[in-house]
Length: 182
Ligand SMILES: [Fe+2]
Ligand SMILES: [Fe+2]
Image 1: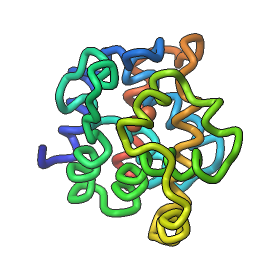
Image 2: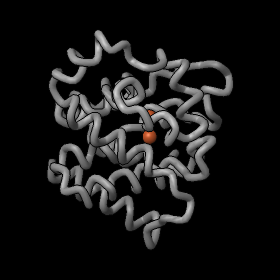
Image 3: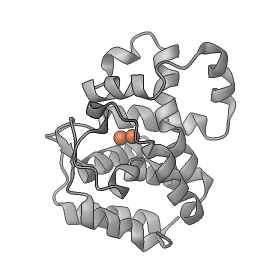
Image 4: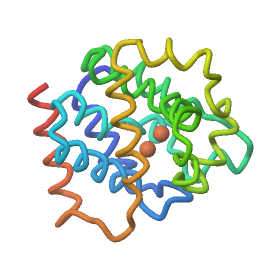
């Protein structure tokens, strides 16, 4: 994947796939996450990261949840590797860190783990569990860690089966225009 248009094409082709275990499709999850970033007045780059944070799942055309098979798909790293050359670190870094952000929040906020979905709790164990506190401070100080933590909160909320845009086509138009202005 070498062009920005390829990102749109990936959503057009595979966005309908279920975000397994969550009751929403991949494009609905992406759109909701992008909407939450927009409402929070995030920068365009962080809005794009919110939209695109899970495209690693689309790269394999995943149709079920890998966590049920005891498998961590490393989707955040595969997505970031794709996004970095196309959109730069301000988009790719929060995507790369969105799984570790969960590990950080579980380790540092007492009530955070209880709010995670069942699938997120299952994947947490596969992804290394709560981040050791000795690592947490250094993690927090790296570039775009703040953005990753903001993204993570939207990610956890963007799983509402009842929250939809007027149409999928309109949602895709929103994404295309966001990416065009990066
Ligand atoms: Fe993810
Ligand atoms: Fe997600």
